[in-house]
Amino acid sequence: MTLALIFLASAFGGLQAQKIKGSDTMLPLSQKVAESFMKARPSESVTVTGGGSGVGIAALLEGTTDLAQSSRKIKFDERQKLQQSGKTVKEVIAAYDALAIIVHPSNRISGLTREQLEGIFTGKITNWKDVGGDNLKIIPYARETSSGTYEFFKESVLRNRNYVNGIMSMPATGAIIQSISQTRGGIGYVGLAYLNKDVKALGVSYKSGSAHVQPSAASAKDGTYPIVRPLLYYYVTQSESRLKAFIDYILSTEGQKVVSEIGFIPVK
Image (cartoon, rainbow, N blue to C red; front, side, top):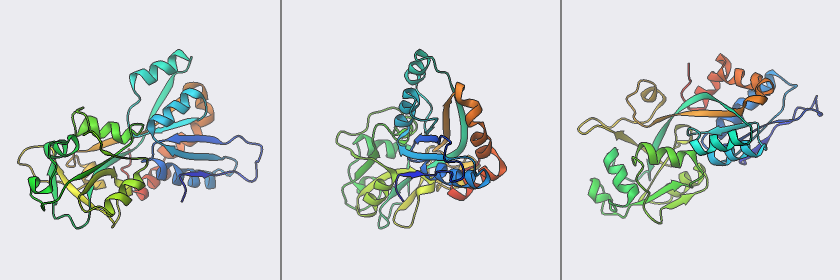
């Protein structure tokens, strides 16, 4: 599957496609919801592309997308730029996501604390033996700076401290999965829906002395897993009437069923 899926309504070729762009984490969700939405409403057409949350919000500013999908909150300066161009935006929480910490399947570590994760991704901890693992160099992977996942991880896990210089920066979530599946000392982070058998998810603890909790829809929902974030759509208020059907659909029982099927957490 490519990063861009274009869905065109065959019966109404003259209609302009609604465009969704941004978060790589949300890509499988938007694609699946778009498919389901167009089956229910064959007169509609939707285009879905990735690129990162920052890319989606920039496209909203440029007027080249209708909906920006984002795995982080819009920044103050982004909102300001939109306002300066005469645009006001609305925010919709479509789902919630548990951010999973992943390592190579051969790694015998089963869990880490937030402080240990901070040490690893800021470069203070460089060998797995320092956190109870094998004598093996740690190779941390991160998303690129335009990614909302990059921003959220920095804020929530690193407490806004800088990533280590020279960190392996990946352009997409799939690239992190592939890299870590081939790197014994690798560690990275991905949205819950991307977990597969090629990588191992670690339990995480934010409180000293508390048990490591594995990422899952259940642990995210009951609040025991600590790295949880909203998945968002942003749109320009002036386009609301045209986008209302899609927004209503993703928040409907049927749309939220798709959220669960993909592996995210429904909002209701």
